[in-house]
Structures are given as structure tokens and as C-alpha cells.
Image (cartoon, rainbow, N blue to C red; front, side):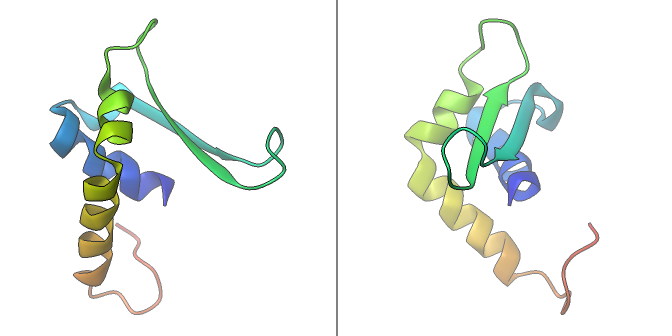
Length: 76
């Protein structure tokens, strides 16, 4: 899911995929969580766009998944 969000978010934030970082972690919250962040010190607001557009971002991720022809996961 992390890679999919990092691939879709640049379309909303008007940035490059390399401008974003992300990690899936459960050590701090006791449950699995996805953290997406700007790769610039102090941030440029890209991850904030993901937060503000979360519903549309996740809908775009579902559309990407639904259109994938791979039966057992996608190597791309």
C-alpha cells in the first residue's frame, strides 16, 4: 500500500515521487500505520495534500488496483 500511495499522491500534490518518503510501522502505535512524509527538511506540504485529499487519494489507489491485470500481485 505504501508504494501505491507514493505513486498516486504526486498526481494530487503536483510533485515527483522522489519528493515523498514513507514507512509502514507498528512499533509506536501498537497497530500497523502508514506514514507518508515530504523528503525536504521542514516539508513542502506534499504529504499535507495527501491528508487533505485522503478520500480522493485512496479512491485513486483503488482504481489503480482494480485496473491491474496481475492475478497474484503486481511486480510494477
